[in-house]
Image (cartoon, rainbow, N blue to C red; front, side, top):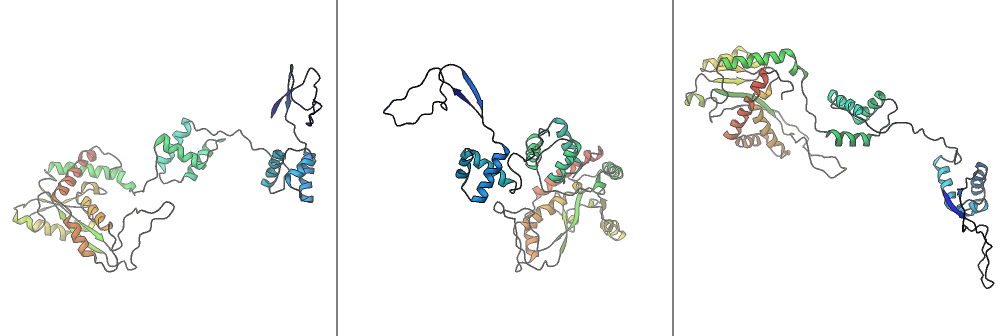
Length: 355
């Protein structure tokens, strides 16, 4: 700390009737030359005696500091520094932390982070920080600052994760999907005009939403009854013309395709014989391609409706399933079918990450 010391060129005079004691040598008034005086630095011996006096005599900080000419504010700073070291290191002897570590993130750091999160989307920020600092020696960054950087610069956010089977993008799966859709087109398969979609789904009484509301800082908890109950599996069928299974005959829909997923049991002789004897043709989905089957969206809507109101031990599941079925409309089915058809060309182009 610096202050300006002024020195008088002429003698100063005091009034006889003044009771104020003025030390003219210590006053900082001068009309002429200006001299800069450095803030006084107290020696280690002086600081050590001040701290020992306070500890042994039990004096207050101002009184102990006054005996060694240490200002009150400086004395408090010295005591705080001494206490922060668990009273083991005298003030001024604490080793200074090196300040040569880089704290600013540059484009090379950002590129490394983007590749890191692309390769491992479920990585935690602590692991990302460690790998970043290992890749760039000398870099130092905190987790909050790393989080702020990836949020603001690249709009990355933590979301609920969904599983994606790696086999979906294998060359074998892509080629199978390409071959099957090519065959569909050759056989004049038309989801909107000559297909009926069949699938099965499971339900139980402890179905809840994956997200729930709670106060800030409190976990989201949804109470369910102890007994999970039996699983109920149902077979469903949707089509764009309000006709399913046995009613197909009444609507003269012989020769239509009954679309099934790639489950092994669907390929059994028993299933295919039942379909062909009724005058229909089985049509199987490519492996790992649920996005091509519109009925998957139907199950999603029904389960979402059931999860909105968790069941208690007095409820039965079957009426809730029936009520959810009534919420599925022809407009829903047509929309799901149109959406599934948009994947045909994408499969022919062997696009990755379809879901």
